[in-house]
Structure formats: C-alpha cells, structure tokens
Image (cartoon, protein in one colour):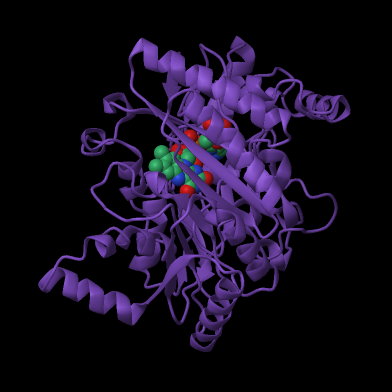
Length: 461
Ligand SMILES: Cc1cc2nc3c(=O)[nH]c(=O)nc-3n(C[C@H](O)[C@H](O)[C@H](O)COP(=O)(O)OP(=O)(O)OC[C@H]3O[C@@H](n4cnc5c(N)ncnc54)[C@H](O)[C@@H]3O)c2cc1C
C-alpha cells in the first residue's frame, strides 16, 4: 500500500499512466475523513491511496450569482474563512463533519449539510473530471466552448453527465463548481424539545406539510435526546430535540414563525418551541458570558454556527466520549469506535415509524444505546441515521458487527435502503440492484476505465 499526494492534474495523469502500465489499483480521497463510512481506506487491500488534499485552490467566486469553483482539498474551514476574508455576502453550506473535512468528497458521496443548500449534490453546477482512461471531461456547459452560462446553468444541453461521478468509480473530480447561498437578512434558528418518544410521528407530518407548502426551506433535523446531547453534561428533559433555520427576509421570518406555531398547535404536537433570532442570540450570549452561564444555550452555539456556514468540531465531540473528543481528533486515538447505519423512508408516519421500530428493536436486542437523527433530505423523504458506538474490545467489535449486519438486513428486507455506503460496506448492497441497471453501469465502467484501476468494487461496480 502507498499514499501519494498529487498537486496538479498533470500529477494525476502521470499516476494513471503509471497505474495502467503497472496494473496497480488506485483509490481517491479528498481529505479522507469519511468517518463512519470507511474513512480513507480503499475498496480492497493494496491500493494506492490518492490523497488530493494538496489541491486546495478556490477560484471564480461570483458574488452576484452566488457560485465558486473548488479543488478537492478545499475543506469546510478553508471555504468558510475564504468567504470571511473577502467579506462575502455569501455563505457555504456546512455538514456536522468538522472544519477539516472536504466539500468535494462529501458532495460526491451525496452528503447533506445544514442549510437551505443542504442537498449538496443538488447544488453542484459543473464538474471537471479526469477519467481513468486518461481523458479529461467537463459536465454541463463546460463541454461547450464559450458558453456564457457555464457557471450558472447545470443542465447545459444534451445528456446530464454529472450524476455519473457521484457514488461511483468513473472518474477523479478535480474541480467542482457549487452554488453558494446569500446570507439571510434575518437569521432565525427554531429549536424545540418534545416530551414523548412517539412525538416524532405527528412531527413528520407537520414538517412534511410545512416544507411542501414552502414555509420551511431549511434542513430539518430531529434527534433523540441520547443522540442530541451524547455524553455531554447537558440535562434536558424530553425525548426528542429538533432544529431548523427559518432565516430569510425579515417579513418572511415573521410570517414563517406564525404559520409554524399554528401548524404545531393544530397537529397537537407536544413540543416547546424556541425561536432564536440574531438579537436574542446576542442578548442570551452576553447574559451567559457576563451574568449567569446558560448551559443549554452554550450548547446550541455550534448549531447556530452550522446554520450560518461556520464548521464546528462540536458534533464529533458529542458523538464520542470526552477523552476521545479532547484528543487531537485522530481516529487512531479514539477510545470509541463508531459506524453509521442509515436508511431512507417516504415521509409518511407509518413508514417512518416502521423504520424507527425496526432499528430500535435491533439496538435493544443487542444491548446498544439507540442514538438517532431523523432528517428531511427533501420534503418527501426522511433519512434515519443511527450511530453505532462501541469500544475496541474483541467482544464489543463482534457485538457491533452482529447488530450492524442484522439491523441493516432487516431494514433492507423492509425496503429501507441506505442513502450511501462506503469502503468495507458495499457487500451489504450486493445483489440488490436490478441486473439491467447493473450491466449498464459495468459497461460504462469498461469504457471510462478499461483497466479497472479506479476503486474497483465501489458501490459494487
Ligand atoms: C461527527 C460527524 C458528523 C458528520 N456529519 C455529517 C453530515 O452532517 N453530513 C454528511 O453528509 N456527512 C457527515 N458525516 C460523515 C462524514 O464524516 C462526512 O461525509 C465527511 O465529509 C466525509 O469525509 P471527506 O470529506 O474527507 O471525504 P473523503 O473521505 O475525502 O471522500 C469520500 C469518498 O468520496 C470519493 N471521492 C473523494 N474525493 C473524490 C474526487 N476528487 N473524485 C472522485 N471521488 C472522490 C472517494 O470514494 C472517497 O472515499 C459526519 C461524520 C462525523 C464523524
């Protein structure tokens, strides 16, 4: 095994040439922090890991149209600081994965952030890709010399190719143009705590309707309290916490608040709602720092940051035990091991309840703490992510493996598929894809990668 650090497209082209001639396999990472989904490992043993973290350029920031071009090594922190440095009116979407993680790797794996632009893959405009056969292509209008709308109109003309390069092994993306969101006139974070375990069911309907009718445009996340507070010393009574940004023009925020309150009361949702706008945040922050520490507010600070496009290590700290969180955030030093079990469901109460009950009964059966989030990845789909935490003893690893396999199996059997997978995990999807689709994907792979050098077996292709 070797790790190489290309600094340019030419370096990558040379590496491809070398790999084809020497029959080596390669696996590409942007920052390699795909923690819980296989981290930086390749798809099989002995691959050359191509770490693109040295390709860090940010170009073409367009203030008026809201877009920017980034290279693979650009981290959430890099882009956030870049926008601050140029006093930009724009903000980037950020995930809970921390400042040092890439935007590109996460977006290509179709990850979700926390803002109105949370569906990161949907907010790609164009890609520049090196195919493993040594050719370079661009998607959208990038393929049409002189197209003025290259950085604004994703579709271009003709077949849309960009989807081929996400969750696949068809190419190495070297530049990605993404949309950036203008900072809202009025920031407002809505948070709430629900008392009972079953309260998520009416919330699914209320949030679905509020998104379908356009009241809520931000990323809605509901977390059971074990997941929301983790091992921190926050003491909140209840079963669920939820958060969403309802920011926008001032008049819109006011109207949104009113509609949401009415919807929650009509649905008889037993939930304490709190709306934190910039003024309230400043007052509570001042009070907490100078008069009396308001612990629950201090623990909301990172959520406010995430919604404003500022990445934070806090979610990782909540996921881990304190000792690991205080380490230098190197997984080798973590006492806690973790893995995600994710599944998607239509946003119907009966489906979401079934998905929840399947996972919960498996966690209970195997004696693991059930820590989950339910997120609306669009108004019609709820994504459940359960975090499976365990220690490194042989017994714990075996129990975690058993739970993972059985829980994953039950979810799949009932039609709840994962939204992404990862190195070491692709077997779980083996045989689930329709053969006609599978053979089309294999045929494409043979054209773009005749020597099968790039991540063979990724997503079973
Ligand atoms: C506490 C915590 C919170 C998290 N929160 C979130 C969250 O809110 N949302 C979310 O989506 N995830 C989340 N994650 C999961 C994961 O950590 C992130 O998705 C993380 O951003 C992925 O790591 P990376 O950016 O370093 O990607 P990488 O590891 O660099 O890339 C991931 C994969 O993408 C492919 N790839 C990368 N770069 C390229 C390229 N240039 N060309 C072609 N293929 C490429 C490779 O197959 C690679 O294995 C979280 C994890 C933790 C531990």
